[in-house]
Length: 255
Image 1 (cartoon, rainbow, N blue to C red):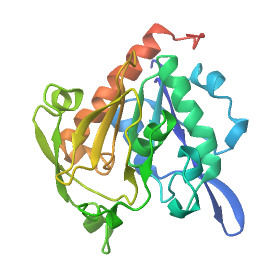
Image 2: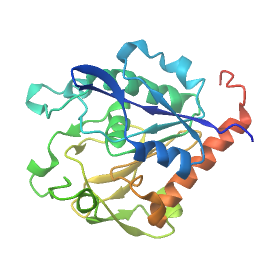
Image 3: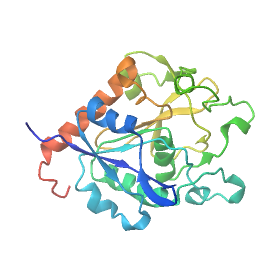
Image 4: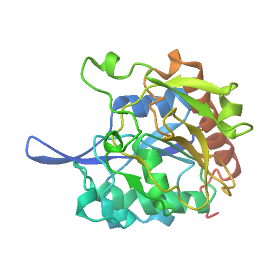
C-alpha cells in the first residue's frame, strides 16, 4: 500500500489532571484521514521550539483546527482590552510562523474556525475579540444544548461569485454551522474573501498569491463531514492538493 501524504495538525496546549498535554479532537484527525485521504501528524504546541521552515519541508499539508482558545491580541497589535480568554500562546507562537512557512513553500493549507483567525493574523490582519458584542453582528457562538444542537446549520454563507469556494461548493450559497466568538475585523493584506455571512462576518478566505490550495473557513466542516456535500467537497479538494504535493516531492526535499 502506498504511503499516505503527511498532514500536520497543530495541537492545543492544555492541562488535564494537573498534567500539561498536547491535544486535538478525533473529528479533526478523521477529517484528515477519512476526508482528505492523508495521515495526520500531531504538531505539539511548543511555541518557538517548532522550527517552521524545517517542519514545512517535511509536510505535504497543514490542517488548522478549531479550539476553545482564542488568538491572543498581542499577536495582532491589540491591547488587554481585546483579551477574550481562554488563550493558548504556545499554539499561537508555533502555528502563526508555520502558516507563513507552508504558504511560502507551496504546502497546501486548510483551516477551520480558529484556523481562519490564525490565517488572518499570520498575514497581518486583526480580529473582533467578541463578535456578538459588535453592533449589527449576530451571535455566532454555538449556544447551549447537545453536541448535535450546537453543530446544527445556523446561517447561510454567500460565496464570492467566480471564487474558489463557489467552484468547490458548486453553488453560490450554503448553510453552515457556527461556533465561534472571534471573527475577522481587518482583513490581512494578500487574503481574498471567499464567503460572507448575512451580517457581513467573513466566513471564508484564501491566500491570493499562494501557489497551491490555501483556504480557511469560519465554520466546522469536519463535523460529520460525510453527511454534508459541501464539507465532503472541501476535504476532497484539500486531499487532492495534498496528494499533488506529495507526488512532486515524495522525499520531502526542500522546496
